[in-house]
Length: 66
Image 1: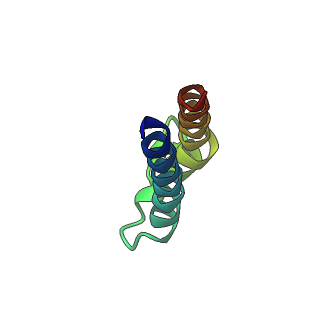
Image 2: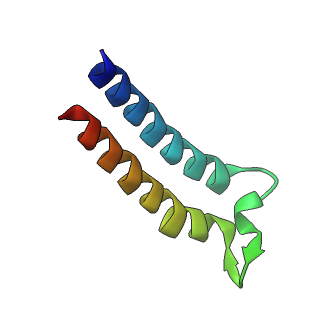
């Protein structure tokens, strides 16, 4: 039971990470264009934060699988 729940949670989390990147890119308020340390928020999210979070979620899901 825990295995199935953790896999579903991992899939939902990974899809949410992807959806947030799409929302930041298509946001009419241009929140993805806000600069943080000279680089856009969209770049920080899509280039750093989301991949690190995806790796962490995948490692946890695989650890709970066994």
